[in-house]
Image (cartoon, rainbow, N blue to C red; front, side, top):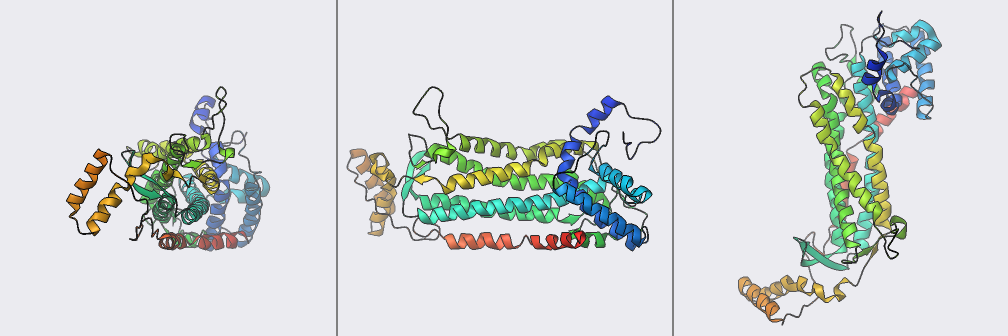
Length: 445
């Protein structure tokens, strides 16, 4: 059985070990490729300052590239008795290379190792989420243009209010994602800073070149103050979780609308049969289970920032083991958000729209404001026009004109689809994922 990196002459109690390690081995599998990349950058820097010989660096890098290939292919495992991914990588190097493998830890702590692992992991996962958000955004925009002529009731207080359209409905969620992407960009920039070299939170007496590792790992800049680098643990996850929660909130609202609008009492949309299930007792039922589960999963993700806050809000500066618990909820969040976005995109792409909603007379009063505006445009004072239409409704004399002409920006007749797309694309272009891809390619050559 492997010893701990920190173990000296006294072995830890096995029950205590199980309690303190918790799910770290399972969670650290998420971080394995990034831990290896961080080590490759770190030892490259160590060679530049004379703490490794050139032949030692070459030997270590070759072995780390092999281990990285295993991690990417899903073959990397953390063995029983090994605490975490950092210990496993060092153990594998030492088995292969002997004492050379013991040199990779000079000038760093597991504290800044996990910090850099998390930053690299988050950066990659944000890119994957952005790809999924973009596909959903594009689908919503296509549906907005496709159904822009189809009117539907707009609601306030869940009461029939004014004319809306499916162009507005789909387009509203597209623009919401455009705003969500801006917030995610801000979180990405907070994350895209290098903490490596902060060691246990107080730096190192070795002459580390932190600018070099920043460039090798493709970070935009570094966390300069070593104490603040350690303070970023938990804070960064909370900021990123808040950004992902914003996307989840948009999708959750869309899921609620879709469930409501697909019910018999509304009948505005029909979900593809693939996304519905039946009842064990009622043969007519088609339940919107997939959207219901989407809503619940999104709401669960929205709880994550609060979990992280409660774990971290009464911790002073410095490292504490409490921070380990964040990984259990945070790391799997990205894959869940990606699956939600992919499923929602598929459902929206195949949703059917009722193009004859207004044939139902219950919606005639949604045109009352249109009539008030028509009378006002003809010269009647607005308040008088409002009163006249109200009295006509009370007397049963209101006959709606169902032709709607809205021309201002963002209205039924002027959706501003291209402007919303430009807003989205402008934000998307600022992520610059290619910068870190090139850095990784250079490391792995």
